[in-house]
Length: 78
Image (cartoon, rainbow, N blue to C red; front, side, top):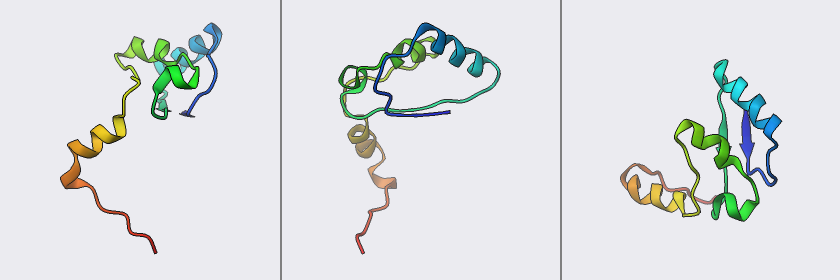
């Protein structure tokens, strides 16, 4: 299941359903833009923290780019 930039708060019943999905072997991909949970008015950290994950308000893409600079392929415009 993919959440590409959730922009509203999840309900308790939605979190319960997602937890059941994960416990049965399901996977989630959560994507948020810069500013994280507070900028997009979601509460996805409430679910993710149960699994040791937290989306912060920093620039994770910039941090990843600097960490893996030697492994990135430049994108060329045509």
